[in-house]
Image (cartoon, rainbow, N blue to C red; front, top):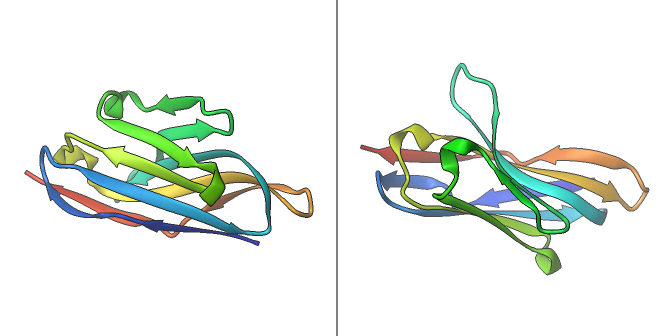
Amino acid sequence: QVQLVESGGGLVQAGGSLRLSCAASGRILSINVMGWYRQTPGKQRELVAIITSGGTTNYADSVKGRFTISKDDAKNTVYLQMNSLRPEDTAVYYCNANVWDISRRYQGYWGQGTQVTVSS
């Protein structure tokens, strides 16, 4: 089993910054992709940013130039630095990881979500 634990959400004023962290632990052989998604009530969960094992990144158009995804392989941790936050960034942010576990099964896992609220 693999667990993802997120931290770093909170309340911030528009224009401010937050940094989210997500640590993966458990029966991990290797992590292929880690990323961040977000969801607001009544809407589908949407991609925010992903980073591959090789370091390739991809961002939603709405966050390009403002958010930066990075990772620490030694800690199995992914970060999301969010700058110039806008009220429309308000959402529950979920960490996702696609993992090869020690039984050599490939599976996606989700964190519990962390609330980010941006006030105007």
